[in-house]
Image 1 (cartoon, rainbow, N blue to C red):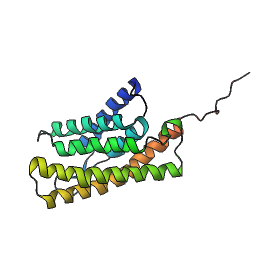
Image 2: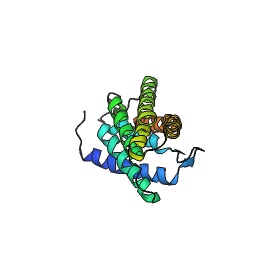
Image 3: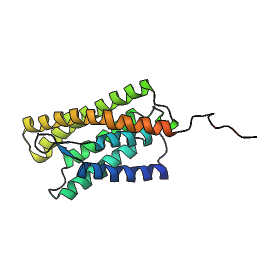
Length: 183
C-alpha cells in the first residue's frame, strides 16, 4: 500500500468535495423512494483507484456525510458507511492497477469494472440494507429493493464516469522514456 502523503490528503479533500457537489446537485431521482441515480460514485471509484483505499474510504465517508447534512433530514449512517466501504473496497481491489503510471488498457478497464461491481454489490446490496434494518428498523423488503437498485445504477454510472476519468487520467501521464533530452 502506498504511503498516505500530502498528495493523498489533498486528493481525499478534493474527492470528498466533488462527491458532495455531484451527490447534492446532480442527483437524478430513480423512481424508488430515497434512491437516486448518482454519478458521484464514478468519481469515488477514480479517486480510490488512483489514490488508494484510505482516500476512497474517506472521500465516500466525508462526501456522503455532507450530502445528508445539507439536505437537513439527518445523517443516514447506513448509507454513509456504505459509501465509505465502497470507496475503500474499490481502492483496495484496484491497488495493483497502474493508472497513476499511465497504464489503463482494455484489461485494466475490465478489472476496474469488475472490482467496482463487486464493491457496489457488497456496499449497496448487503451492507446498506443490513445497517438500515439494524440501525433504523426499516422493513427488509424496502431496503433490499433500494439497495439492489442503488447497486445496479451505481455500477452503470461508475462504468461510464469512472472508466472515462481513469482513461483520461492515465492518458495524461507521460510514458516512461517518452521525454527526450535535447542536445
